[in-house]
Image (cartoon, rainbow, N blue to C red; front, side, top):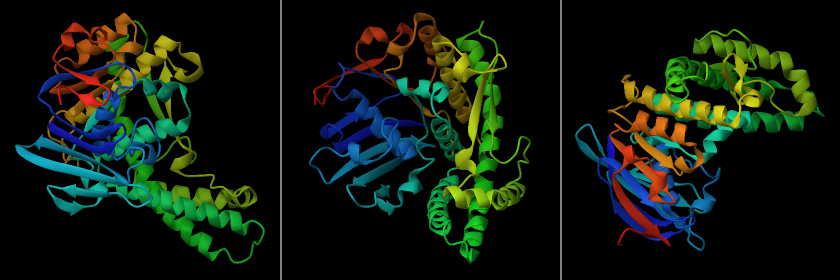
Length: 374
């Protein structure tokens, strides 16, 4: 799998931009603020329908424009596929696949990417929300159909939480709350089951990647922690039943506080280094090694994933967004050695010297929103 062509219109700083991409390593080189990260951010958006830099779509639309368009051609399984997403200010986004109308979520699973970025340190040091997003992103990459469950769960969670807030002072007929409980439990059980499978599959790859990045740093392990129970079944139906029972048990507290207290939105990924929680115990360098292990492990897992629902076709596209400037020489060399044989790598760097020699490839200058010689 590789991207052969990217075209942007009114995305971030670009009124228009277009670039052809080849196999191997391509580095976008330019000083900070020139627009190099915007290019890889656009490709990442086509992959996961989200940005690694902002939570909302509005900042992605160029100031003063009504919409932004991201197009790419992807070679996959011997075919050339055209992907397009239009981000509309104040309206729902639209998409096209091979020039035919599609839902944005229909694009999920076609272009698979693994992104390394300075923000990755938050996977270890930051709030649980970032780790939940990491797990959900991995789940969708492994099973694109799960995107529908995640979207539906967020909708049901909002509606249920709104009902809790309006019902806490009028505890009469709670029949509708019972209905929302059942729907939340059904969707939540499927989401937790998918996360458990993903974490179980990712764990050995993270362990191995950490040994490569920090051979003297001990063992790195990941464990899914849940609001439901310490020991959980992995069957979606059993998890739904467990969640439904938990919701009924905590309902009095929920009505008092006006918030949903159980479900996948309360869970976390516990990253452990030498048996201790990485968050709070790991040094800055050790935290970076854990973050790199998560990303390298994801790349290895997706490269090996050939399940019937994956839509996989070889390695995902690697995106390294200004990450080398954040690493010391040892981790920089270890990361480069680990990824130098990847089929397609897209790198952003302020100066070409930040990129290790083993990743030397095509360099494209980016200056004041101009890509190459365009």
